[in-house]
View 1 (tube, rainbow, N blue to C red):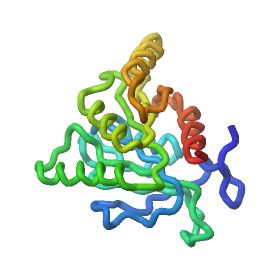
View 2: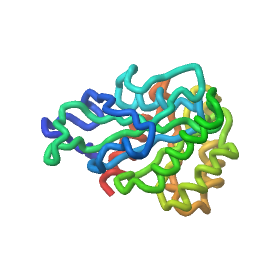
View 3: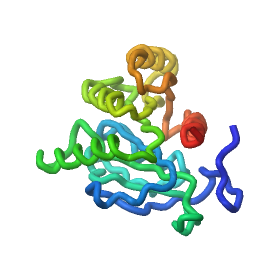
View 4: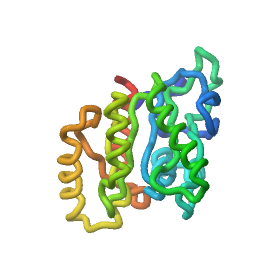
Length: 217
């Protein structure tokens, strides 16, 4: 598959990427422009690590041993674009706050949750959400709640299994099959499950190609 290229012909994921904005509330969202790809998942699922591995930049998305550290919608774009209307980046990656757990007061957690849900419902440039599921634990109840929200909002989403290096190789195809069965009747779910490992680099090219296809839709 041919990658979308920037003005200087560097492949999309071969460019340096930069953080441009943290969004604590909908009023701080950047203007709608380039297509957006968002990453959702339970806290500590490996979201930041996967984003860093995807773009080859270890320090781009903040990682922490403390679940719930990502408290805003964090925007990342390829470097080298002016931001002017005729020179926008080809896409933006959005790291969403983890769900399921956060070491913070309930009121703050509720505010983060509302921000995520409002974003999913109302962002016309959002092309796809990649919902990350820890391969060691599989789909949990709060994952299913997010699937239901995405189905209701008619937002396309695809399941990405993370940390597959932490389970036996023989268990990966079985887990992929079980996951496909669980989402088979969900209207907005993309009918392909990706298996990845940020630590070992597994499945990253598959994810990059899936993103490129999604933004070309």
